[in-house]
Amino acid sequence: MTEQGLGDQIRTVLRAPETGPTMRRFFVNTIFDSTFVILGILIASAFGNDPNLRIIIATIITSSVALGISTGVSVYEAETMEQALKMKEIERAMLRSLEDTRIGRTSQLTIILIAGVNFIAPLIAGAITLTPFLLLGEGSVKTAAIVSVGVAILILFVVGAAMGRSGGRNPWKQGARMAIAGVGAFVICYWIESLL
Image (tube, rainbow, N blue to C red; front, side):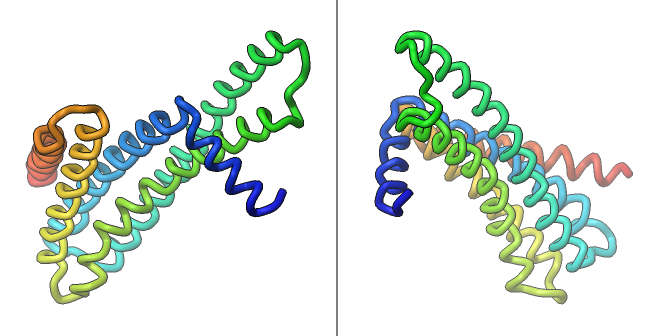
């Protein structure tokens, strides 16, 4: 397959009516979940009595990678099943196999792109929230944690606003709802951590 051919196939996949909304929906769900997990990690590891920068960094990285693999693989399997059912319907209507056809290759590429978006989303959330720790270093762990929480809430706001805009709703209102959910989760988890 030539590079140009692959580019054409990717454009074809992205123009399909179901692909864009599916990718967007999965990306939003995954980055939302990942950001909440990172908020929990920050509370447990950075706001304790003796925060350890290496443990915080390692936990955010390993959790983001694990979430990426988990969501990427689960979405790959779910989309493989959905695409197989769709291909069977088309094959029944056309009375022929589509295994090695343009339709079949487009179906496979759709699965890979959707799963890839889900794999990348937690890595994006992890990389963004990790940045304050990498920039401020060992002497400012608490400050980095506060900045990182602010960045995580900002991620939720931006994702919510993007959802609102693409869904024809007020982006500021949708972003604020997501950010408020993040603040609420932070407060609840911080309170739980203080009881332990």
